[in-house]
Length: 300
Image 1 (cartoon, helix red, strand yellow):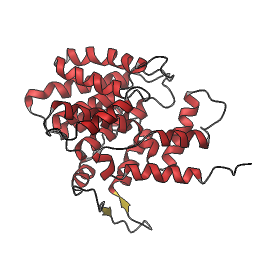
Image 2 (cartoon, helix red, strand yellow; image 1 turned 135 degrees about the horizontal axis):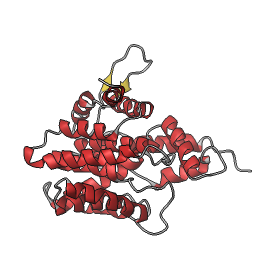
Image 3 (tube, one colour; image 1 turned 90 degrees about the horizontal axis):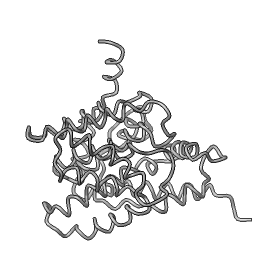
Image 4 (spheres, one colour; image 1 turned 60 degrees about the horizontal axis):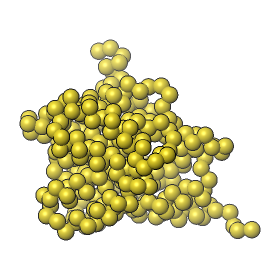
């Protein structure tokens, strides 16, 4: 095995144990399972271990194509949907091609985090496996066109990502309906224009039958928007690291976003999906806001 293949093998993430544990949460999400570890003062939850494993991908130069294949293969899709895997791998390879001049934040590391988070949220929300696979592919593609800047008009960077991704998926045999769902998921991640409306749509469609197309699509879109920001709200250490990267990407004069900027962002977001609530992500966001507010200097 050559060195490239060895590196590729080390980057394959195995989430089988974590996924099975997360699927085992009860319907209300109460009583998150704790994994005993005598080396720790307090046992860590499965969610914490998941965060550590995903964070470790930053040190492994993880190949997105490997990650996508690993996760989609776990879903055991029917042979009639092999094109989902083929297209997902092709999207991953497109991401892997970009090895230089990546933004400090919106880069392959961020994409790996969003892919893994989308998979976990999709399974916890009990989406059909085919829809989870589509969500994973959308996560891999959602920042393909990101330049490190901000939108100058609605859906600008999201549209660039779609323009790169959709021809790749079409060439892999994806149907018009499937690529349209990818487009809708990606544009939903526009923080200003997409996220507020998809949150409301998720709420509005919760009363529809579980197999309703409108409901399934609303879930997919919402989960991608939540996966996109999940690790910024995961804990103080992750938030600190990602805030520094974002400050660098935006060419700010400070090494990190200010405490007020970080609090402002955290107060603008919320996790409303059943999956995120059951995993305790919303509580993590609120706790992080509280911790940062304690660091604010007293008013003069």
